[in-house]
Length: 225
Image (cartoon, rainbow, N blue to C red; front, side):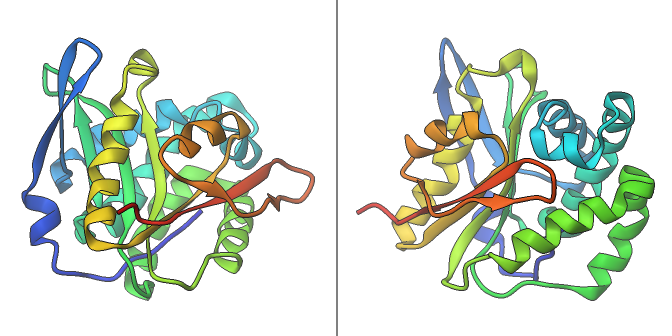
């Protein structure tokens, strides 16, 4: 599940601090900085501890708990934060309640970023790194060519799940997609989340199968007028 990105003009993405009503509290959605990567990675790791695909890559729960912060840290630090495409939803006390890793429209890929990320990915997966590569290769093979914003990862901390943090994060970027007339794309690694994404306009376009493992569902969203 390695996705690389190219540098873009991110002034518009990084300057916004948008606030949303989340149940009875107010959350701020903002662009992430490199200083946020450690806390962001821990939040996403806790969100994906029981994810079917991550469980297939790292079957041992303890090994998965230790490895996922390295994986999400490498992804955020070397790919998404430099793009200005990583957003956080913060709790009232300023800590991270959820995060998204987006890639902007257009071709992406950087050999240099791959090299810089490799130590973190090796720490994440160890001998299971080929399983991680299998997932990444499958997603890359079926990735659509039409321009779109790509939601690679979205996750919320277990203690705020269901509190609206994920919705605030999705609306933040999807509002921009609608304003620009740009499509959005994601892969759901959990069948239970499909109906949730459908509420935001995403539609299942297929089903990808991992070898002797779980399925992944590509989902596409046309911009709304």
